[in-house]
Image (spheres, rainbow, N blue to C red):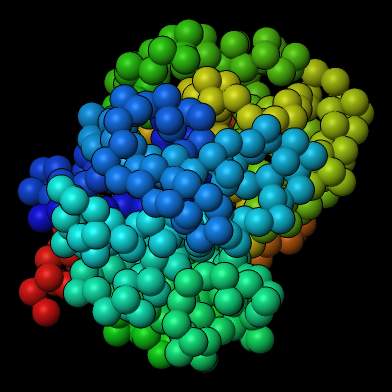
Length: 477
């Protein structure tokens, strides 16, 4: 079976978040199930550098953006297709916006072009390429199933919702330039509250819809999580499933991670002390034996960072220290920088993102705090499990599906892997932090938490099998 996976980003070529990790890892996970995956990405410079520059197809004018070519390359040992459309992707700035952080005003056209190209390829309109399934990830690729539908293509399609909060909503005026027939302008097509909804269009047109955890698949049926799409999700309930993301253990392995000063396993956890000293040095924290809590996150309301900002004084009073790596809302960035100024040696903040440093934090901090208000799946807590960095998580989405709370029964049974809490509030998070400090003070129990987490299987093996079964089910219907 051959699958065309289309997304805006994929590790290691282009990454702004967890989407890239998933898209980059899925092809290898599917290989063992007899599925060959080709990844289609926008031709930003880093992606074009992974190609040989050989064009296998060209468009004279792709959705009003001028000439475009399809180039072949490789990503992670698997086939890569790059959409070389200079008018869309050759820009001085980021993947989604300019250097100031503002979205590119023509993102609607840029990602419609990516989806249009994906549909052309999946429909067999590119000589030498044929696919059984088109798998579109998030709103940036979600128009592809709509193009397949209105082009009467027999190719089956899947849309994966990585975060339903990001939907790709644009004004009605763009519809005429999308190259879709007039019949697509309907409530059963791309129309969404008087405008065009890219994710909505994909959810309407795809043969199957997946989310990135079973709990999130249920949560998005409710208005507080469905973000306006809960009705459509309910309508398509029989075609919706939740598959937990995996992590690439070739990249995220404390035994082999070159970003760690000291590598270790569940049997040699004492070696983490060397990494802890390195975290103290990097974040100018006072050396000590008390717990280091870490955050590796976007600093946003969704991630519950406003609640954590309210708790930092008490966290320090508990004897904890905080090492934070992230960026996001200016007000939250300022709040944490000021907290670091109030508590020098106790709180260290690095604004921005640094991939090797994120590995060091997982390998050296004691616990990772993830107080998200909603979290479709989350990969950070899975990295924490793999590295013995105990997750402290809100009970939502993939966090609820992947972390076993350290309640009395779970601790006594030696199956607990972290600390869960319910209400994302100051009191709820403080209670979880106190529980973590109490567990940390009992070295035997803390070691048990770490080892249980490190034994958990969140590799792509199980998830790859679930996707393979989904694909085969579509082909056989």
